[in-house]
Length: 356
Ligand code: PMP
Image (cartoon, rainbow, N blue to C red; front, side, top):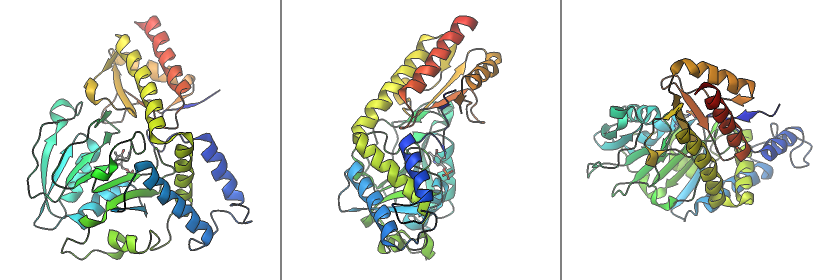
């Protein structure tokens, strides 16, 4: 049976990436060694890192002001590392919150300085993105979560700010073109649109660094990572390699405009199906619906386990909503084929015919 992987992360990756990664475990580029046993300071790994960094710069059309790093840990590490490097004890950071991940990021920042919550969509169960808000003029930065993985909302137009703009793009990185040069700082855990878990991609505009007074542990210091060319210590070699392969795949497929075209087509199909079937209730404001994670509910909660059971029987993986939100969540990352969305839409139509 063909499986449809709607996991929210780690999630579906391109088949060709998995084939190449498997081959590299056995014999990396004809070296006779596995990618798991080559040294990270070899020309072989340097070429992997160089290509990964160059691909990010190419895809995001980044200028010389920005550097790209591949660092250990998940996005949760960045919740702490960003304020450690950018927020002084007595300074204020602005956080725009639309769900669980933004809230966690703000909680970590409060350990390092003052935090002002400029917007919080908890008043409507995080089903929308607040566009009207004001940022304290002296704020060191504004932090946003570009896509709310759990709640199913996404920024479709990034806010204009006079303060540096920082974004957690973990769950929609490389899903569409945008003016990425506008951001002072972008971070993303790799395990959704970019590769395997264990590595973070960081894009940083150099001028925001070196301004805090605190002493920063070496491994947490972005400036030191930049100076070391993202090779301060042993990086997660295999995870960086899988990211490099996925980035290469994105470029070969046509880059971010092509990813956006595919993501838009998949999301349109799914949301149109939800909207056309009264059995299913979308809760997210239409204009803020995520291209990556669609969250919706069944009108009759008793039917939810029945629907989930049918999904399981049809080989549809990962459609149960996040534990704090409930309902259904269908994640449609870059590598998810249109045919998987078509499959769940026909199941929904069939289910509605039988139970509606
Ligand atoms: N931010 C967002 C938007 C996420 O979706 C996630 C994980 N799903 C995280 C942060 C946390 O990432 P990690 O588990 O890699 O620390």
